[in-house]
Image 1 (cartoon, one colour):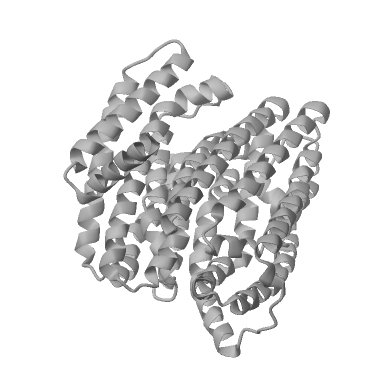
Image 2 (cartoon, rainbow, N blue to C red; image 1 turned 90 degrees about the vertical axis):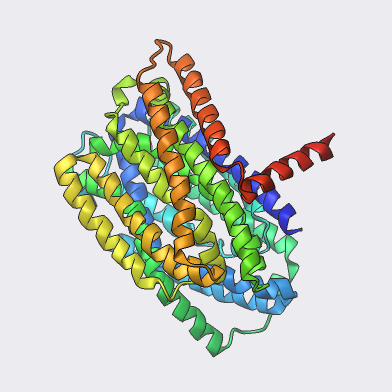
Length: 505
């Protein structure tokens, strides 16, 4: 049952993100072509500001999901209902906190944006985006139950409906009215509709959630508050890492450059999101697995997931580096291309963001948050300092590389010490050896592809795109298979594929 749900979740995640990626690219195309590059920059900048505002959530969602695993496994529905009631109250407080903090920073928004060449009111656009951020917390607490019950695919189906129709209406508004206020307001309306639909589905599927009278006792509340305090550093750090780049670029370089950067980062975000969704589809099953307290079994599962994560990451990086130039040329035009070295910087960013997913799902499922809480604070400081310094010396690449350096601190120091060793009972040297092999494989495959693509030019961009994709896929599959053909993990996936093929006959 665990494998079946994980499979459904993976398919649902892939479908959701494929739809999201396609409609996001179409929407971005119309923003750039109909409204202009500065509107793309404003949209990207506001998205980053709102990302930083989401720090008010403080990791409550992850903590509650962790608390739901055990009562769901035991069929203790009164306890499940009690936790959801508590979660609902927390999210109501968060709704108001986001509004208040958002209004406090409102006066400095024009300073962050800088000089612009359009007539729309910056304050009004920002307030609409702020409403969208706040409403994302209303009526959304019940999605945690669906997630903890390993039925992510339900949320993904609803998300597909939401993202498709929202973008459809937004594009129609841009074409018919050129009104950016309406463009932003449509997202707020569809956000409310999405949360309402998730609530209806949850009420129908889990009828007991509205029947509970059991309360969370003081000891459990204290425990969850301690966990939230611990995870707060992690949440704040990752929110700043994800949200600060556009703000730094806007302040240090300009809003127009944010527009160019946003076009690239839309693609980068799509790539990293695919990896995240594929690997996170195992999260609930991992949470269920760790309740068995079998470290050797957990380690064997980790090795399999880590190989899958590494292969997907390497494939995504080679596809990105090979396809980004012809894709942007076809998508919005050659005039929106940035220099080639940004491809290397973003490739490193994709690696740092994606390769850690296999270990972080074990961290989240095992509830580790107190032991490593200060590591995320250090990561944030490293990111901010290096991003500002490198941006001053080398420009936009410096902002990307600064974020990578912060991630590398976690990957090389925090994860092996605070997750790998305690969860699996293994030496940290095993972690370094395992992941060094995958990194060396990535470097070789990346260099092979870079040398081929940079010296192989075709006048037709569509044909270039197809040829580059073929080169990326074939070199990655062949070289990765050769490097790891004798490992137990690749034998496992080979047998899994063969058994699936036989069962389909």
